[in-house]
Image (cartoon, rainbow, N blue to C red; front, side, top):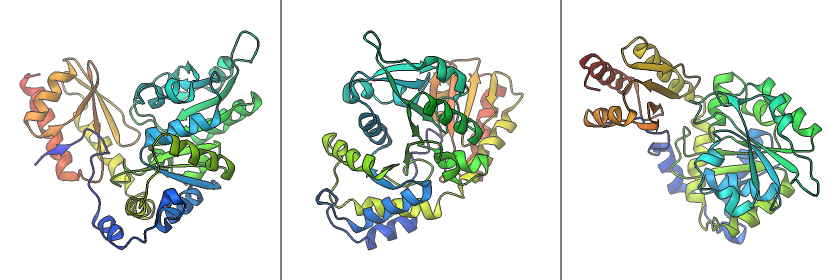
Length: 341
């Protein structure tokens, strides 16, 4: 059996998703009427406490639509040092929005509000004005860390005092809410807009949803068209998203439990230092190169991704059960004990 821990994007649709696709009422979303897509967008907006929502093909597109809609070319935008929007989105902030990125250091992806305040630029003849703060919760490269609601509230205060809007890259915001033990709207009420992925832990095959004020989403729809994201019978995919939001959120706790269990099982092994996970992402700091570990585990049917020269990422999702957890742990222990890596 192969245990694929590369990402929570590798999941296959659930039986309920296939059924929903077969039964989906369809129209043409580019022409303004696909009933199933409209139902998904209404459900998404209600779930995160926003006025409106827009279904988009990917999280990267949703984030970059938000960035382009919030800003004008030449604006200064604040990002956390290792933000997905900077690190994994192919320099899109420069290409589409034409903004100047300024970064803020963090503690495992959690940004200090006072550091944000210190990085804000006031527009002058010589400097661009900072107009937007982009946050990420959970934080991918920080190992799935969840920013507490109180920190979000303080960041909102700092942003408002400086006249900034706040966008949340909430690709895994439902993981954050589950880990924090709060409804997701308790996190999202402190931001102006949020983009979340249906195709990560929520197990849809494709898609993300950008949520925000109605006027903002109207302008975002224009940017989606400009970026080539207009879909026709998108209800086939939106049907899966409805299943994701109604059936797949609570089970995220199982992924968190398994990540924590593997971290505990590997603690103390020679050459391996698990970073205690907060959600479904487990980072392993290794004495030997991560690429060597990746290759050795791949040969044994465990798939992983190196994210740094000596760091391996393992991500739990609905297609990795307790048997998969046990298999991954066994092979990692065997390799550690044998000294093969």
